[in-house]
Image (cartoon, rainbow, N blue to C red):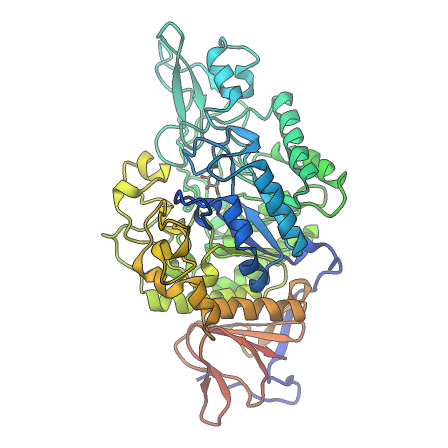
Length: 590
Ligand code: NOJ
């Protein structure tokens, strides 16, 4: 057991500050510096019309769940017109709602209802590619080679004697070639077009001013409707290196780029998950965000942008959040850090160093719609495992350990200053669905890898709202677009909400204390005697001491502490002192 000395220099809790890492934020009135933002994945949140697919009225109907939870804002994954080849990340019309999800009037109603409750709305913007059903791509296919309609995308002649080889060797992030060959009206093979993702997601050419103008108009369309900001998809991918040179690296959303990871992997806090190569993180992207920032700044009310950019090291990611660019970037280095005290400290420290240098808030995230849910990930055998989905025939996670660690990880995360993201269902302690049959899977990554990767369906399963209802109350008919595992019954929102100590109760408590103690704009100082401890992460944020025990032995706190939140039951040491068991986080008043 680690016993904390109550030395004269120690504080009320018996711990002393070792080093201040982050000094706190002066701009507490800028909501995005400290917001807890809840990700709604509309097709899996709540279904109002009984077709088994969630929709916007379903979100409106459950807003009070989110208000009770205490979040500041919602980020809505795409709900725009789309053939749904990549669950809406293939947009056919950026200015309309897909009938699956409702209408523009439903969106306006949701926005008004959220605003009436003091909750902001951030919408997803997908600018790297459109759907192949977008009018521009249809025009491009019908237009001659070299025409202005083709110049909005990346059409190129093939290599080889008759253009039979793709223009370069790039691979799609979902697997397979990143190029697809078109067929001319006379039936002969034509040019190729680039798609970093599915064949149905052609990449736009961001060197074309028409593309830039169009997206600024799309921004204004949603800003005029009153949205509070944008989450920008593939924010590091829109500009490609001149000449589209060959590249021998491999790209994957969760694994990073193995040919070039060297720049990041050695850096403190890096996890080797950054994407690089000539299709990512090119300097030219920043000019786009500067222009967008000027657009947002024309609007009243503190509108914000967050970059989805799988870029490492963190100092490189911080270039996206310089004062005249975006407001935030997702911290995937944090998400990808193993359950290990030294590595967690390193990533937290590197995050503050990088973001503080440009005056941006650090963000924190553990789960989203692209990765294995953290309640499952943290129950896998290897602390470094980051599979792209889990099959029934794969080694299965330890669900009890996973949830225990997930709760501890979340309480650690919510104790950090900055802005935090919560993915729908994690407040219920939902695990990944690890046994989906092949015939129900829908992620293009599963198909494009010929089933080698399970893909992301397991983290996208419809939410359980009511334990004793068909489809666990997801909608009125019991239909759900993906089957729910039986285990979801124990996590249903109605049960979680009324059960003291449930995961929902933990999140609700943590968000209440976080707000009351102003932790979002607070400070971060490592505390002794844990500053180098291989088993413990401990820091002080304002008047709150956060202690996470990642080791096996109990960690004792001095006798008289006021416990503000705990991720699991606490223990007593031999002298009756409050002690933190393994894989548990506690917040105490410092
Ligand atoms: C990142 C999104 O989060 C993911 O779901 C999507 O498949 C790709 N970008 C392509 O848009």
